[in-house]
Length: 287
Image 1 (cartoon, rainbow, N blue to C red):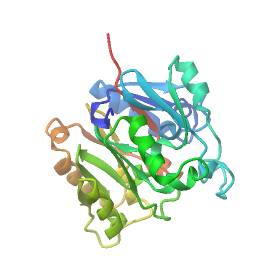
Image 2 (cartoon, helix red, strand yellow; image 1 turned 45 degrees about the horizontal axis):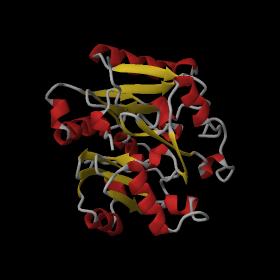
Image 3 (spheres, rainbow, N blue to C red; image 1 turned 90 degrees about the horizontal axis):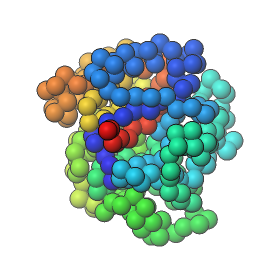
Image 4 (cartoon, rainbow, N blue to C red; image 1 turned 180 degrees about the vertical axis):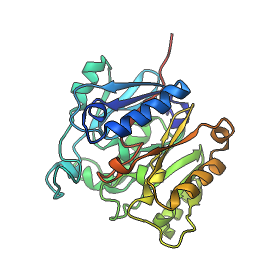
């Protein structure tokens, strides 16, 4: 499995650039990437900005797994308005065809925001059991995930209902191949046991502020990571500075090169996501 810290190219939905709600944020992101020489492009034929959810997952240089993108929040089970969330479905086939990208298809219902990965692990919420209960039992689903994504461990963690979409990328991220950084609000004995059972270690992202903004501060964990840079959300709240300092501790190889950069995300977070949600990162073979 190709991990985030091995990727070298970023894609965003074209809508991030053309939708006036996000123009300022898009300009800030692309300006930062240009400054550091990070390669990026925009995806055509998308209907929303949440590229991570619908784009295929890269396993190796020439293996991209396209899952069945049919999550509950696009089936009318969530009451949303256009201003509130993810109401329009993008079809991965159409986007991948525009890229001339060949994929391997699976019938597993999944969305990319629910896959946090290192080279030998993928971590998902157990929401995936509910989504696939008519086709897979739990044991066979886990085995299929491990085979499909070529990892030793598919780790299923509890889906906290406060995480509306059931996505792990709003809960935790890998620090290294065997250590994860977890939002402190997700701390439960069950979560720790699931991680420990698979040989994983963890750290908690803790904020020492008088009034933590838990409506927003979960979003720091939804940073964008490639091998060259970490873009860290900034929300103009008290936790911003602490999040930046803690990221420098947990990701020192980026900090030493001044490659952790804060990006204002207030216009995005109110729609239910942040930097990892709006990006799709791959390892590209440059000639």
